[in-house]
Length: 274
Image 1 (spheres, rainbow, N blue to C red):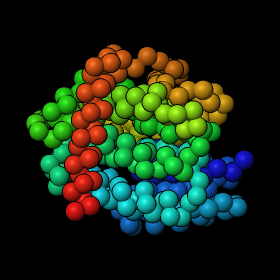
Image 2 (cartoon, rainbow, N blue to C red):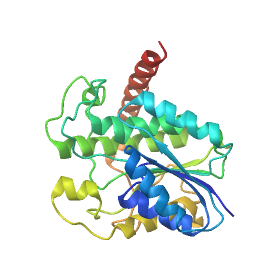
Image 3 (spheres, one colour):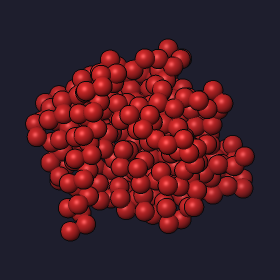
């Protein structure tokens, strides 16, 4: 059955590799990127694969929640149904790690943007749909003051690891709070040190085969193996569903992280509407 699948951060790396596989399988693929030039190049490459499917492209800077809102609205305006949302876009290092809204860019792009996008696109998705969130083996306890933008994190890796645990936390929390007719939400570590631009820039190494990451995202999006995986965490380093970081199982910490996420987004989206 042909599905409609949105992949954020799909102009290179694991995102583009996943898009290639899904297009080759005959699915409608909605791609996203921050750069207009890279987005156009990716769309041209995917169109060249041929077949009876639809390619759509969307440009948005996910560090800006106003652009995330506009992105979601644009997708909803062109699609009455979305079968799979793959929140793949992520950032490890940036020349200026603080956004115009005073947030750490890792929390903005890796945690807040996918949360907001998922919430806004949920009405397009049914109980057979899936939200696949790109987590990481790199996870560390979340400083909610940093998540709220009130304190700065000095080290790139620490900010990245906290943002990925915050993503894993909200994935589980949102999954378990949804009604029965809502899509499954699954957090996936696609594999450590795969050869994405982020790994190359962040660690100065070539990294492993990004096809490993693309393969698990396709499985998570489409396979029966993940049909009943709502709220679970899949660790592709160990090739199995696994227990998340202990902080994701701490009820009080989970409530605090969700409270801060909702508070920050409420303030930003309210300010945008004024």
